[in-house]
Image (cartoon, rainbow, N blue to C red; front, side, top):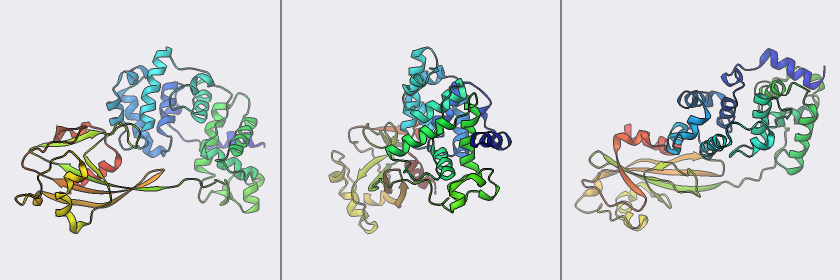
Length: 356
């Protein structure tokens, strides 16, 4: 049996039952593909369900505010996906409906070759092969390809091979089969080779190279950043700001932030007294009349890993008797309303310390 026929047979017997596979609605399929970028299905499923319930069609999503979309996305990370999703919804409405060509799909904000191929093949039967991490892995192992998958040459090689293997008239089932096969059978760690229907023809299995393939060149340089958050609680109010463009977490909200070398726990009183220097225009009066007792360290060096950097955060709670003036960009809200604001996952973690 040929490689494509084996994948199709395996998929019919083992494919995952997922709600966005029970429809040809391009909105539902597009939404699932955006949510599942960098996200496991078990984590992304409830988000897809909530989005579909709150905004059941692309017009309603387009009419939502960016704040509402970010708030619904909270916890998934990679927030540019949510902003692109919202922008693309407005593009689609302006077009009068979903584009049904690869060129039209690729023109949508946040939609690259893989996502366009997935939507196009599943929703519109376009004869285009998908190439994602699962497909790279299955093809690299089965055909013994050691060209790095993140090199220009590798991307071309794998894209051409995937397209050449695409069976006529079966793009939707075959693409979904390849994705499921890589996620369930030919997994990154401990693939189930002994029960694999492709084992006899698999180069990596025959040569004992499953752990070596696919090859990926390491080019990422990870940097560290140190953040100090000060949660102000004053007579039922707290202070937030919306993060500006050009940095991580654009458009999300956060408490008072000082980004500097982390402060030693023993230096807390001195550090609090020096906050005016660190923050700039904020005329804090802590350090006078014993007010330092109203500021406490809640957590130190909370580690949070992003793709390009590792963050270490300290978290303070400050409870002044009167509201201090805030730096530009910060504003007061009733503390009970903080749940209405989309915050980064790190801030979510840190806010949990307020309830310990």
